Length: 292
Length: 267
Image (cartoon, rainbow over all chains, first blue to last red):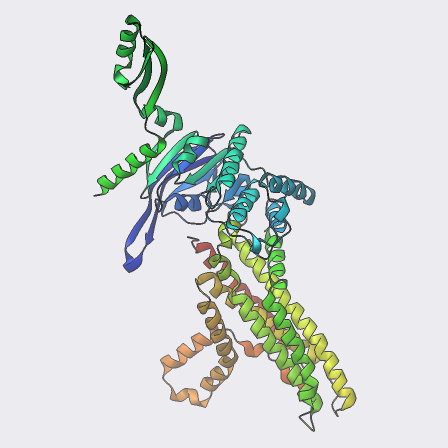
């Protein structure tokens, strides 16, 4: 059983002048238990629509989603999920601690457990000092961190995070990445959306790329990076003279064989490859061309 | 329905901490302080006028509170994107709507009780100073205030329904006010059309008026003020009818609110 399964999900809106807008088209993917899945796409690609559909906030036109085998339309399917919406907003008249208490109650945690867990997540997200202040006075980054804290409160098995790094300063981003890595170590499943490719490279096991409501590619980050190898930068030293050579991927074996027969010494070999961003831009531009 | 209580407490907290509610409470206190003064404007019926003013003040204050809190309840949470976070929790939309309704309804009833108690003090003070020939019928006063509370809880269910459908303040606010005025006049219009005058208007028009009469609420059934002001005898039948009508109409409105909010997409 997958942590999250999306089957031929489609969502069609009626836009201005009754124009049909296909926000999602036959999107299918599964997130395996214990993996970090990055959902990458440009703005307006359908990332948030997918997540909102999974969280039961939008009804799909066709297809369905399930969380640990339970239909996403059932509120009980969210019992094992920690959800952070995009640009979260919380009741401003409550303090951070009161909001966490409210969230804990909806997960049927008892008071002592809520207190204990609240302290833990507030400390983890560096919010202890602001816990008793009304949320009204929180900065954008603090609200974002509170969003992550409330998602972690009940120690869920699956995290669904919509742009978790949005609105955070570099320190906050580093903190969130560290938290995601730690959650992965604990065996938690994480499904998060982003349009920042660097985040995917650092924390994800697999990535799905979405553009204009269609899933364009799903692969492991390792495969993508490996398939993006264009050649090798080789540093060779001959009679005390060092030179840099660029060797094509398919010529590497032949080149190395030549080197062995010569008196040159290989100092360094570095793969020269496209990064995740280049891969992402390739796919998005392909989609643009096919649409034209 | 396990999370119903969470939303109930949350809404109570929201209303108690609302600065507008604090200001409104001060205005209410001032109104009740002024009632003894205004009651003395009538030289002969000071007691009757004081009861009228107290009941009118309670009615008006409950109307304002109901419209403001009911019309902005669900719509504001959607607009401020609180629902995006809240409905990502393992809660149902029915719990959310019904929890909100119950909290506001309880505050309406609590406000009616407090204002009813203050009214008793004001009326007692007045009757001690200006004794009337007819003694105050406290039971009738209690029934009149209770019926008013039921009326506004019912209006709340209507405001909530509009709030679940709306994307702005205007529909729930103005539609609720319109329904309130129409609901207060519906019985009179119906009686008028059912009388001799009705024979002069086309059959189709009469049918339409009849249909509208049954669809919009009939707030006249909750009006027991005259019995309270003049200590007239009150039979149990209209009270039971009012309670039954309240249960049925409010129940239908709540079912429609839940259905409407369940269909709503939180884009």
